[in-house]
Length: 196
Image (cartoon, one colour):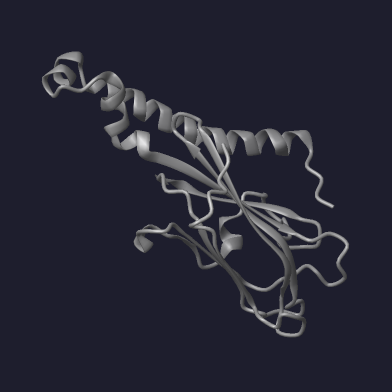
């Protein structure tokens, strides 16, 4: 079971909020650079001017991976790849060739162990909530099998708006256990499952 001490929880909050504060400052700066006269000259109101600034389209993405608790041999030490993409442009996909290297759990943390809720993240990027998920284990190590509950994507905007989408897997990524595959793929693009 994952236990976080109060300093670790506070540090995680700082790591999450710091980029958001920077995004908000950039957004405010972009708005102040676009003076009232310029906005009026372009027939734009302040809201339209802010929405068109690059900083207002940036989001921070937090990824949560839940490994099933109480499942014998459910954790893994294999290398994990994750790709998240939207319905349209695949060039804007979030790709993690070695997901563990993007971890926010701190030094010495053992990722993908039974009962873990592991957190990962990426630097702010253009907002585009993923609706497709591909999770792949390479099946390596002396613990190749992995029972995954879910992958959750949390999109945090520069205005601190939050969208959440969960991809429920509730199954093995294993060559030795049904469904005998080392990947899980879901396409929820036609399903409006992101909640604010």
